[in-house]
Length: 552
Image 1 (cartoon, rainbow, N blue to C red):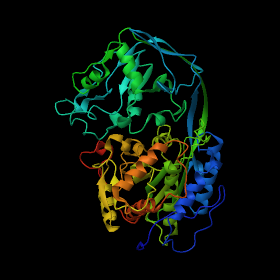
Image 2: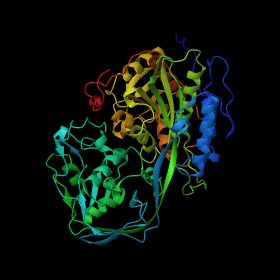
Image 3: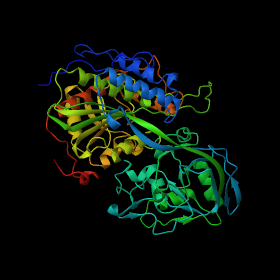
Image 4: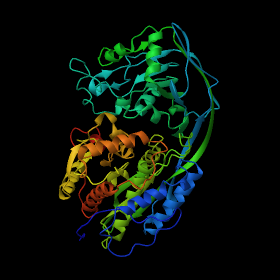
């Protein structure tokens, strides 16, 4: 029988960088949230150099994670009986533009990199050269037959620059617009994600794809767009699966100027894009030209995987995961700091996965089902590590019971609520409501559905394969904090978003990990219930993933 859980979760006590955790002895309850803080402090220290895939920081991170997995008594669950799964990637970096401009009806407009436009390329080539490529505005760039929506109208994009609006047609829709209610209101669908737009441009033969930035529609500011500093990562692809030669973003002010110089009203076109009758608009006399040096190398990055083997049904797996990567070293900030340490995104997720492993391993009863603890690579570069695992699973996905993903937990203290991301997907949501009620918390729908958080984390590749998923993320809105209510929650969230992917996402003594510990406890209780039962979570009737797995 499983034991009764009492007390508050927190993280196993961390140690100085590169040291080994001591073995766990005795009952893990009660524990202190200060331990979560110590672990985040360790993994976000300068020792790990911002944890960029393919860097020396990755090597140190992987070594450290393996040490933690070993010390907790997990079994290696990677390739060939080891602790890691190799993930082949291409790593690119754009150099300083030799030439970057757009021709309009009113003359040539130079484009300033990182101010007017942000660019990267995932092609393994030495230089990207585009000469006077026609520019086509494709609205939101959505092709959704199941919703009766097609922005492309069979317009040929081969050799052209496709310009998109961020989010989907329902984001800014008002009553009377054809898009109103067609895509779930302000809640972003996958059609609104930048990844979908770049993929769709490539499928249709465009040579480049540019998205017009909008802070509300994207869910983050221009500083987040430019954070990768010209770096790109991708899974190594074949000739028939090439990405566009250039992909990136236009600042809104630059886009408005370009459209105006082409004799077009950008705001009017945005309104037209909310109607089913919208057709792509070619900017007359336009031509995008660029000459950009590019360096690239094929690298091998790594997922780190540990396991507790089930006693009765070892072939059935429950997965807990978070991404270990952050943004590495970039340009100096105002204080001269160059390391982007990723303390909250996603050092706290890594800490949570280690804590969950410690708690399950410390339980005197071996679970009936196997438990897999994953630290994924390259989430920040397009959810690449988890995507690679989903395409090359080491444990069958049709027997993977559930995936729990932790990506950014709030550090402002205990809360009265928990925010559900992507409501209406599967029965894990019912489990969450049940355990939250037992902890005197209430589940609320995410407060910022337009950010599309359900499509922005490592659970997504597993949902696409039919595995029921649950994402725990503290960016879904302002939590109702026990100390200060929603106003205090909003203060934390707005402050954190200023540091999202920046050098200031670092550990501080003022961070309060009690709320993060609350969330980890909910995941433990849900996971424990599944680990000691034969129950299978199910997709709900209206979920877009319900057809991916037959009911069990």
